[in-house]
Length: 234
Ligand SMILES: [Ca+2]
Ligand SMILES: [Ca+2]
Ligand SMILES: [Ca+2]
Image (cartoon, rainbow, N blue to C red; front, side, top):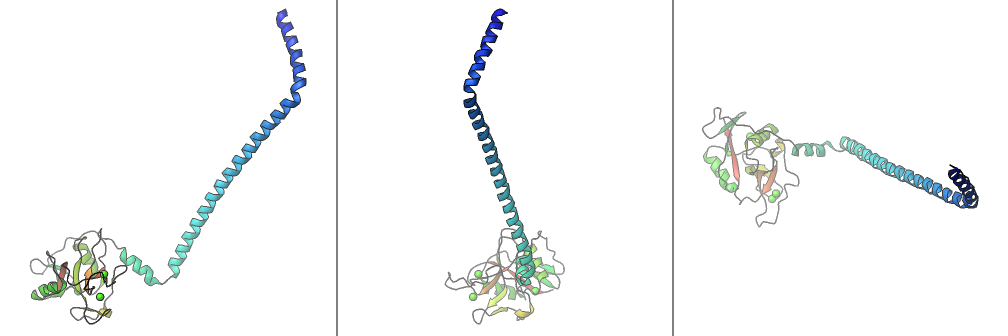
């Protein structure tokens, strides 16, 4: 007990002396530590605020871009937005019906159609259609194009009755239908008269695609073999 008391009293006195001797140094250290912690906290706060600000800035930029897109889409010529929608019309496949058409042909509106099972060049394809009393298909309206887009093979291109006979840029329908009386559905970047091939591209076809969508037009080399679609009056 005494020992404890003595010890504690001596201890406290020694401690007291020690305290007096080291207090300014300790205080400085404590102050330093406190300031460091405070500085660290301020730094963390600044960093967090900075990150938040940059996030906010990015969001504002995104919103701006989005708004620009909306107003741009609303303001620009309807032709370009129509062109975009024309590319992006997707379909489910449709099982065609024969109707009043002869065997092997299918019926839509007032026409019968034959989808070839073989691939030949454009001239041969038109010849085949003529022997059946028809022509390569003439696309009179979007409904006809969309019907054919639903019943054809997605991955095949098909010759149609579109041909560039007289000179470059002068397209016509094979049955004499006025081209200006029918809507046009060229695929993006077509007709490009791709001159990689010797013969250039003077015959029209419905373009293959990787999924079922509206089949758009492409100009291709007439000498190449593709499937084809014949049309004749029902
Ligand atoms: Ca037609
Ligand atoms: Ca051409
Ligand atoms: Ca082409």
